[in-house]
Image (tube, rainbow, N blue to C red; front, side):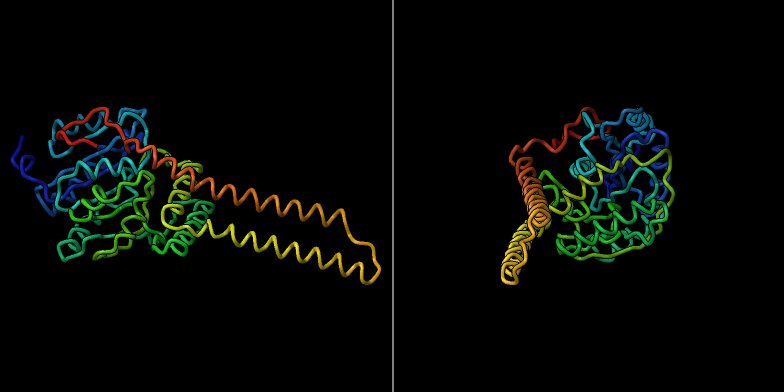
Length: 319
């Protein structure tokens, strides 16, 4: 093992990966090149999130030639948030960079991120300048979700990404002081505060095959993000109740007015519309309450965030 591998790393790079065997070698090569340009004492930790392809075997092969590249494979697919946490818990650097495996997060920004960290920033956020690689539907969905979280949750996640640099103090806070199971990483880092810096970038085309994010996975992440940072959806139930009450007054007023002027009271259509509206409000309310109860249920179970199946180059740290 070379001397730089034995030295305590100054910079750690954490790469969550899922079925990335086609491009993980190129990703590691580019990130290592950018780290070498800034600091010789570094490490790269690739967290294989239960891939079905030989991603972990690729990591092991690379690690045999470069001990500063380390790997963890989880027992199954626990999700990107768990993979990021696994990387943070096993990173040893004074600063930790989280970057995707598909090269949509440009490694060329790493020197600038490290420069802002050395200038005093404890959290360096990267913000997407454009979303040209996304479809129109995905752009619209991302905009709506980001606006909801930012306006209701009180944290700015507009066009933010998981591509961040965190100081060791921030990493320790996330790992030790924030024990929740349902996590939204980019929201947590914005919620923390501390000294922040921002870098804007253009999203590159994805390396390899299609994105692993399905519509339902993105929807689940969005719900987690919203319920983790605000109780505003619960207040919607109150407004729905007020709307139902106003509807009741409106229907009653129409009935009374019809009696006063001697007209027959409109019945069938009014009753059907009222029942549909009230039923819809009730179902929406139950759904909102159910989402919060589900999150409470997940937290109360207190299961581990992830389970490690195997690792290479990693010490005996436990999740």
